[in-house]
Length: 223
Image (cartoon, rainbow, N blue to C red):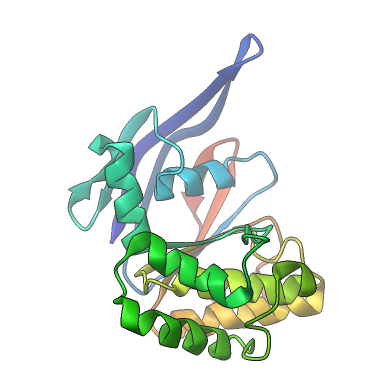
């Protein structure tokens, strides 16, 4: 589905270079649930930013179903990302002035891949599947952390992307709420969604079929 070959990324500043990724290789097939673990600063978030086109690689290739993404312009990458990747952030990144329903609708309006006449119906379906049918008119500030993360997941699924990418999605939640979010990800994967998730937490009890460990910008698969 998506493959990284010899990806390197170095950040420069304050008179020194910081190599965030060192010749990373990674191949993800459709239906995989890949977990990337490592300490803070190991390069996990940089890896996801490269995968999703939020950052650009210094060297190496990124291919998605035969397309070499590293050669694309920013606008081409953005259009691809909108149709193919749903992103879930640790701190939700919801638009504070929009209601729960409108946060999900905004994602569909932005991409335009879902017909206008079906957008409200799809948004309501996704929110109901997240247990948020009574929260559609609320603002993000009126929700708990777990509820906000569920809205963020619904938004990430709004355009029915084949790939879901999550950056520390439970890092800002209590253990009980985090467990419910992980159960939701496992359910999504069982329904066919490909997931790549990064975390610094213990993954021993979680459901996944691929495990990668990252340390000092070097990625190795251990499962």
